[in-house]
Length: 399
Image 1 (cartoon, rainbow, N blue to C red):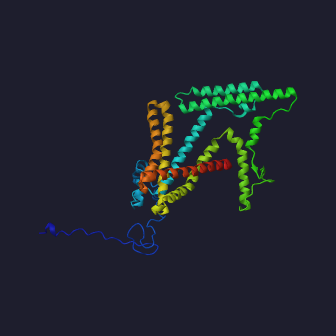
Image 2 (image 1 turned 45 degrees about the vertical axis):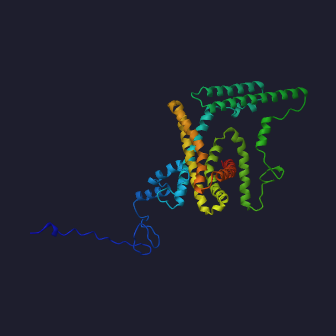
């Protein structure tokens, strides 16, 4: 009689060894411990490849949720975690910066595009033949002035018009009336000059157009052939390209007054590259102001990446709240007030967060943190102002 205890146990599966295709070493994980070659290669299903690409670029998994909430609400937490060596559970600083910068500026472009289209549809003044500056008689001035003011009055009838928009419309009306008065004065001066047989005064509109398109170089008017801009240490092709940019900017000056939208969108599209260039300079400022902390430059760069990532996330939320606020005014008025409070709270949280982050990461007292925060803020504000100006110049030269 056979007892149950005598039944032979099932044989354990024999583990098959696998070896690296590059160096022949035995594989103990997803990477070869000798040469570092990954086990996964390119010869595999397309779906697996696409999953790896999405994970590499966006890092969309549970780490993104463990990262975004502390990034928004816990100043300095991610930076201190990263510097302490607890890194794998969070999105890496550069990926976080890249993802949030792309998302925020794409949404900003969409929001700006929509806002500019709405503004252009609501108020159409000083455009083409309806420009007050080009009117040749007092009757034309009065007609164009009244038409422009009528457009402004029509815009004021829009339901739930924001206070900021109402103020802008009031400024636009005052500007229209001032331009009309200036044009009427000029036309009166022309009539008096003709009656006396004196030379007619120059047309302010033509003078303005000439001034806008006027570029000086070497105390003479710039010309790409007779008086080009020449930088001695630049090669010939670079000087030629520089003069081409200047000519393009000069040609764009009259266009930007009629339709600034393409140039504004172009500047916004250039800002991510500008900020990417400025970010290492921000890390350098931190290195200088915290020189005696004896931290590596890369540690300051991690602080810069996380602080910029927070700014992009806050900008993303502010833009979303602004778009939702515009929708709420017509579809859900009860939601407008909470969205207003949210935008105010985010606006105040920006400097508070950056200040607390600086204190928690560098662990200095309130006095020195406040002093350094203010100095770094002033220096970086100057750099950002220069960067924004550079973005507009690039947009003007390339659009």
